[in-house]
Image (cartoon, rainbow, N blue to C red; front, side):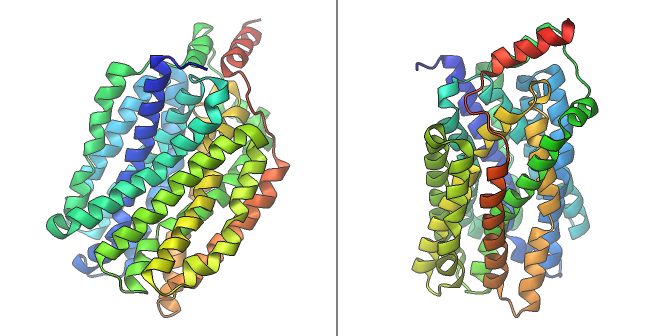
Length: 409
């Protein structure tokens, strides 16, 4: 199926939006140790900033999602990208830990909006047959951002320090110009807007409460799976294995290449075998990989384990953008996927502090903390995903038109 220029531009914009959002988030995970040293505190106290960022993301998903459902996906996405970029820049000027914590909480609000708005805009615009592959591409934006952050840490950290890492994070603001000049509004949103459909969020969630509850529980497990294997992995490499920044950067690059491969492969595979089955298979790959990933001793073996683990983690995640958008109620597609995703993030936001505290209390045994969370999350996802709905290939524009017509009858 041939793509139009508008469909390509939307996909590029959404991919870059999530990539650069993740880039700004992951810049911090490399410098927890350095921030703790400057502010004369311990790593778990600084890791609380990650908890705050994740905990505030549902607020962003709600705010920006509702704005996108009311005023359109395109203008909301531009405002969202500008907000998280500027907050990243300001974080680098923090004079103390308290200020940094406040700024990272605000950053979490901005970060929480991008995924839902960008994925809705894309899934409502591209051809239905391409959704699985594009879903994998969009979700690959997350490890792509981690990958770029890894490169920046390995190349620039020694020259710019931890504050400079945040200053680099203002670069995503340039994406606003691309969106403004090249991206069109979603056809499905236009179909709803033409009939001035403005459903109440609470009424919609009340109508679909079982779907919402199921989705929140599922996304809680997914967020423990991703953040439990990613956020403290650089700290695990630096603190438990005492690797230098260059080695940490190389391993992080390798694991993110695995994540990109996993997302693209399983996203595409989901078009053939179904969303739920692809997620189940990807999640279960984590179990045999756990010993190599967490308990190896050398950099090479750890890198191989990290590569395989992220094929599993982001392989499962690669199906999520299309899956949540397909099962979402049409009236709130910019709000529902992002909100249930970020509410899962809220519940799982304790992960970084929990893992760091467990590791420190166990003599810096980060390996055990990482392995326990990853193993439990993979099993929960593999089982739970099989009990949910699936609407592979649904015509979103036609469905939106039907909703708009029925609401005006």
